[in-house]
Image (cartoon, rainbow over all chains, first blue to last red; front, side):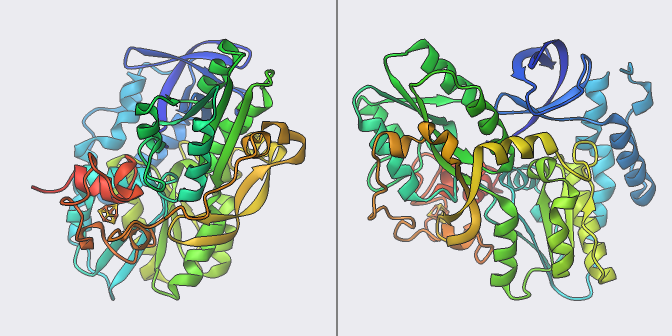
Length: 83
Length: 363
Ligand code: SF4
């Protein structure tokens, strides 16, 4: 029930937005967030965006894990298309 | 490409070394850690992380599944409402099969009641807009993460045929209760990632005051492994403890203030009953007076069934959600109680501990 899903905003109008992940499109509400823009990744829960995903923080966490646990990477996260 | 990037958190190449580190971990004394999130339990079971735990490290599942802790008396309200003529009862899918007395919402539906599963409170609202001559009741169950969307939806209601039965609970008072009850047995908490989105890291300052370490963790295997490893490191290093935020990609220091304001605007704090646990002071939320027109209990004069049984004979769900027993300790687990024929709520909900353990059990 609490399974929140990360999706990317492809369209927005006021507090209504269309989000997409893996080719699946959904209509969601943005009432719980300020300052989101198209292209942002957000977590969706029961039809509402509950938070924005922060790519820089994600990178930092991965970097930390990599250093502490010498964990490998299958791909370089920096090589993403960027947003 | 970007989507792939967030996938790194379930990349086995990254998770592998963490898993190795976990299974070879040596602790100076036996430790018991608790998580309080149904989604964490699901992830742990799915990734088989429990089987990687070294001897001496116990990871118990606390009362983190909102469906499992919803008392039978609350469900009895939904059942009463669903039996009234003209009512459409809506709720999340997980509530559909939770028993109350000798029935469930699913059975009622089979008997002809109009019970509909919705994914979002907005779906319930749009049914109310489409069918103005019917009363649409939404059985609202959840913790902070779900309460915020429910509050937002209630604020937008413009119809008079929509009301809610609330069975909403907040996590911090439950953590305090668990700490007191466990009398030093718990060494640390893995804090629920999505609830933490609303509360922020600051929302756990009471844990620091209580001198117990906690880590906020996400749900991918890398998140879970990282969380357990870091929590053990903190316990071993000793006090003072500062709650660690390992889920910074979505959880901030101050949390989602807008969500909290919406919740506070619509609901006020109340005491609340947790199935199998009893009343926890200040752990519930009820509609504020200015929103009482949406209170289905008042509107339809519903009264909870005083005889609704929370713990079915033989079920030890109440001990499982307190971390005092494992699902596998239950004699009914996998025999008299399965997801198809659940006895207790822990087997019904996809986030229930028994269900997760059953689904991903080693055969
Ligand atoms: S296996 Fe079924 S009966 Fe046993 S504790 Fe879990 S839910 Fe209850």
